[in-house]
Image (cartoon, rainbow, N blue to C red):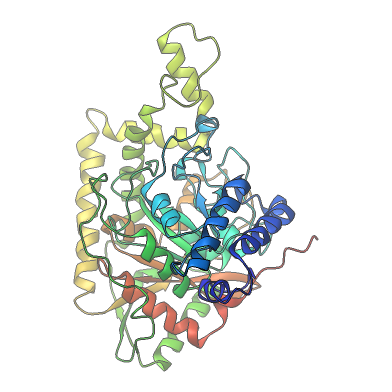
Length: 485
């Protein structure tokens, strides 16, 4: 069951080949048997999932089921879930039980999806390897000595290992696409504002976007259809109509104009990854697409710009965790100042503290103009590069990551080396554009991701382009072995 697409599972549920309860029990059994090897889940909600599956079976029997009714999914532990722990991978929220559901959770529940549990993540979504989690690192199902990517590494690993049919994630600088590439799954970051941020615990508010990880573009289209749409409770939500993302999947892409940024194919890109990307591009040419080199001249500035803007926003957003209202509180504080200091020092991990300190510094008097204001100006230049590029091409393609998944612990002592893993993904967030990573030919048995970047609200076009490649190739159907060494 777990190797089938969502479309195939939905068809089998309607044909009564198995029930939603049986499907949910299958995934729960796999989680119990296999998750100890990869640590993809923080919380498993078996009782809640089975109750939802029972309701799904009733809808299936009544003929009122939707495309996702009875399809078991998981949520990244950054989305608030009513009466279920929402930790953000942090000691700070280890005991926090949300009193409401995030909009994304509400919409997927309304679509009939049983929630299997909450997936592991880098603490407060800050990381590129899923090694900063209070609950320990997630291991890559393809090689358990390697990272799954971050911060949505738990979601990516769970999908890759067949521990859920699909999973939600969030992407602030590549946190859906990078783990999708490392784990060999499809990961979509929609246009900023396409999916509601209400109930999604904030890291960097002008960059964060909810998205989906699934086995294929067709599966991702089904999940995005349920997630997307305007939400009046979210001031950053885009009041734009949501198209039918499934409708254009089969459209012919002959005549498609693909842009390859020369900045994405220079020094720092692993030769094996480059060869895999080039092979995928040739498949697109065989489908009738044309390829041209383009330039995103300010792309090399995206990493330093991001690591000014994102920490600045995180220092503001995380100021609310003070030990007073919710979250970790230190024992026997001497006074209010001691309560603040020790609660935050004990509750936050090293990477979160690093980014709070950087953000506070760049926002401080005397440095705001030199750092934060300058970064915002450069952010506009990066957006302008994309605008000019889309006057020439329909889609931008390139590697999702500079290399395949690296070994656990390989970069934990070098923050800059860790940050550079997102060198090809960050600019998309700074410009608010949709981005998609799909698996292409592996290198030395490890997955490689091809990144597709589209113009604003062109998620349907990206899914169509990705689906056409996945109809022609089998790279997205490869699955890891979780056999014990």
